[in-house]
Length: 294
Image (cartoon, rainbow, N blue to C red):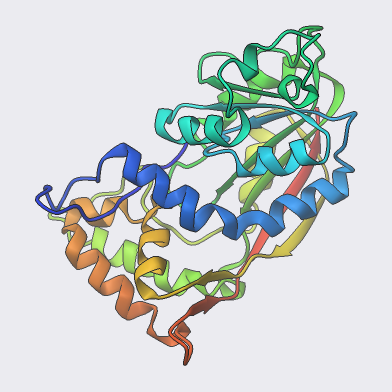
């Protein structure tokens, strides 16, 4: 469910992804934090706290779960990317056995987090409490086929939640409100250089107005509100920006069509309008969230 990440490696095949551990760290250390305002806005609206039993689909390296757990929520994360999940464990479960800790554990936080690989989310906690909040913080609507695996995942997760539970879907805002969209267009242009041109899952495409509503309809969810959140992408320098953006997976098709060095060069050039005098990079963006009920 999580996108692959790309980073140039000395001596590696220039058209292949970097090793999984490096790719996961690029996401966790650079890019994931850009969505923190989205996490906070959703949690404020949902009043996330000690009464919350949250299931995070595509939890990645766990920052959204960490923010919820800090508010007192009981959180379960599911992901198919083992490297990202390992980083989430290091964040949420630094002592071995946290997600297996018994209910009488002397450390309450150990009873608030559980991380699972894809294959069937389990109820939170030893008492089998059902979820009352399901979140999808991996933004959808900006890559071809990025919701195909999500719909069946939602259909599998909903029966584990209480009746009337809340489901929150997130996605990119309108392209005209996202400065990063201009840079992401590089991905589509380079992917089109493949001969013959091909359309494949993960290839960047412009966000559509009803992307989130379409997923909700296919998953049998009832929309019950929405919101927009400012999530500017800020980087220390162009190099960090390139690594962070490639870690989203939206440039994978471009890398396969050309090579990493060319993609990195052209992304760096596309970032020039957003580079400030001190060398930092700043791109204003807006993200959407859709609140649904089961």
